[in-house]
Image (cartoon, rainbow, N blue to C red; front, side, top):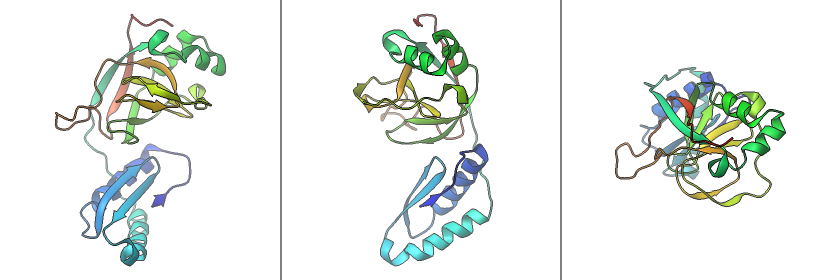
Length: 204
């Protein structure tokens, strides 16, 4: 694993994407897993190849290559608050804003998809305003609805499937983030630019 020191930046992520693309075709690599500020290699014979692959990782990172994937601008409609965003008022109280200000702040910026993980299609987005950062819930929910938009620490993301989860839920989108019958099966991909668009049905 290549693990970078904070902070997470788009420039570092672009270098991770480039290195992942390069090593994805290596004969000794079974799978490449780019993450947020890290890159993991799964090897066919880890005990035999570990030292050589660590050296290759180091060499590749020092090569300073970047990959800027072809990106799309994707609008995500979101119903904020109410039953779709049960933690909106808690986020507002924690951040010192009104619920409407949280909605306006969250939907005012363009985000970049840094990587997909945790679940098929779960988006880790970069670019959330620092003033919206809030710790995860002390007790995770046993079931979070598909399409839920949440805040976890300094990140925001969208749950593609019903799952347990501990992020603060502020809204929900009706869009399907993951469909195994389509190709590609995920609505979003790394490098995409995402904007959240508040819907009038929301109750702040």
